[in-house]
Image (cartoon, rainbow over all chains, first blue to last red; front, side):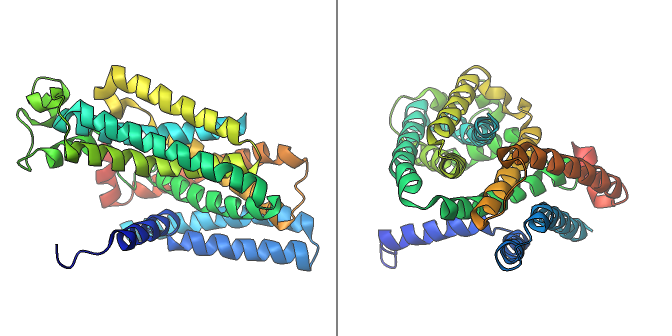
Length: 78
Length: 268
């Protein structure tokens, strides 16, 4: 069994791989886009006190993100 | 109610996927090991939720919990929704449980090839005697455990996310348990007709709910004051549903112009 990694290392790698696949997978744009949207909303609410703008812009950003990711998938199929 | 429905549907979809693997392991390597593997995986998942759930709910400040959980739900929900929209539009092949079943059965056959009579014959109970074996089989156990644990882990995250974010862990856990029981019960009766489950429609519904709850809780965690408070959730679901419907129609129309996508549509 030479060269086999220790159990704890294999578990850590598997744990990391699970979360990577879970959050990133083949759509890194979704994770990045969600983080950007959260940053924008946080700025609107906390820095600019624009609650009503945040209420509208957060779902709008999510919709743009979904449409952009689908468009990327559509381009890849061509 | 919306929360319970979201957890129920998500758990049902994941349970169908886990059931496919468990039935394939049972048919190929013997039911005893497959069922033991699945049962132990479920027990481990219950312990995980029971251990992590209260810790999340009572130790982490609610705004932090909602922001983190909401972000996870948003990313996860968008992934589900994207995939389901692509499948509905014919740009991606639908999840074929029969094909997945056959792949697992073929891979699990001791000689690496399909069991006697092929996967289809084994499924009907007319093939290999391996499907009726009562001895323990390490491969069958491991495959059933891994399949159930990995699919169940996603359910556990949804239960902890939706239940923990709203202090309704009991409701979420009960909804997930009900879905597992319904699918397991259905599996006993119609294990050979997994492909009949309208998985893509369920996936769209779950994706919509996860994205809606994700938007709502992330917003709450960041300090957004939603008009109507909790009533904002159904409004978000409705808005996202309308947009999803529109996106499916647009992509379907565009897919008809693409030769590769036309093949996917015709293959269904």
